[in-house]
Image (cartoon, rainbow over all chains, first blue to last red; front, side):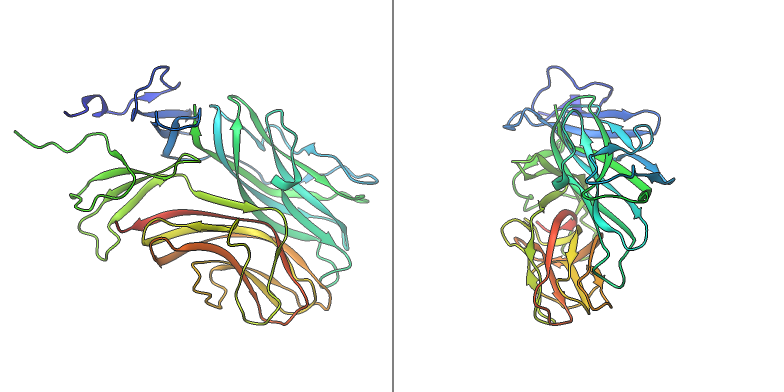
Length: 193
Length: 186
């Protein structure tokens, strides 16, 4: 028998509280920017996030202007880059793919690593989740002082309304400020609930 | 009475063997991670890849720790066929995103980080490249998207690397690979 309830998939601003297996919705993730996510409810999933992503656009932000890192002796701890222009809020609890990138520039012949890393909710940013810009004055053609790169990771167990923001740190002294520019971040769900 | 096709595409574990024009299905590509792919059958497509990918999440792997890179010249090296490999379920065309940090170990020459299907083709169109004209080791972090066409069913798409210069060592860290289909056959 035809499933007439699916003639039109509803546009919703919150997920149905009592879904049936195979139910689909278009979720309005960002009305301002026209971001709609298509989900299908998989009752047989072993995960608590049973709404699986079927398509839609990314939430996205960018910051072209330079962010100058704090200078100082020794390793620097993670610091926010820009919680307005380089941060996104996860509208639903779940697992997400996050893409980000940018250009790090620093003084000539630097010797340190700089990580540009997403901090997810209350969790600390981890180097292993980061985009690692390695600058070493003793290697390469006289020491490289600029790199432009990108990375993608899957983050799991993101809380609803969690703020995902970019942070930056170095592992050694920065005698003159390193800068991050042309930076960007985007995210979209894998599954939510 | 008309035989109406299902209005809600079916969730399938294999693509239908006798699809009708315009048939849509949801294929659970990775049940563990909830990766779902939406396909539509285009009967008029030329070639054998007639299931067109509408959207869905990517298959994804990553490895932060070091993998040994190439040391011999012009020989492709698989980085890690356990942790940096994605087996694709269907024959078809796929979009691959790849990235990582390449460390040359010693100076001179170039190192390329590739996404390939095991064909070990020495080139650079599918690769992130570290060019090191200096006499000391160098490193760079980068990313890229490439389309791999004509991939066989159950092929292992993997990260691999090659160099054009003999070197004592090289390595890749922070490596990752993401794969989504473009079009496939059943």
